[in-house]
Length: 126
Picture 1: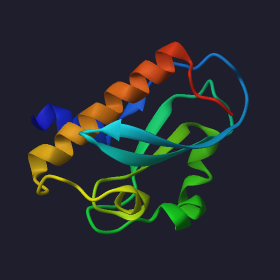
Picture 2: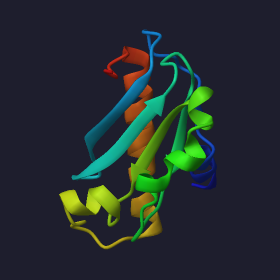
Picture 3: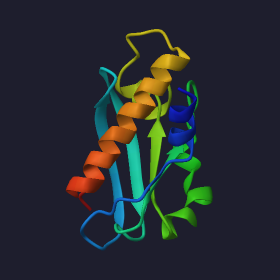
C-alpha cells in the first residue's frame, strides 16, 4: 500500500503519446463507480505525464492552478484531478461510499491505470 501511495504522489509516466502538439483538454472519467473530473494540459504531447492532486477531499485548486503549473506544462503533460467530494467531481456526483484512505487510494490507482492506457494507446485528443 505504501508503495502505491508513493507511486501515485510522485507519478511520472514515461510513456509518450503519439502526436507532438499542445494539449488542453478536460475529461470526465468513470473511476471507482463515479464520474471524476480531470484537466490535461501541456506544451507538447510527447512529454511524460505528471499527476497533480489539486485538492480534496473538500477543496479544489484547479481553477487557480495555472499560476503554479504553467511552468510544469513546458516539461510535462500536467494532469490535474478533482478527487471525489471536491470541485468539479463533486458537482458531477456525490460519492456513494464514505470517504476512506483505502477508497482514495483505489481511485488514485484507477486514474493511474487509465492514464497509462491512454498514454500507450494515444487516445488524448487536442
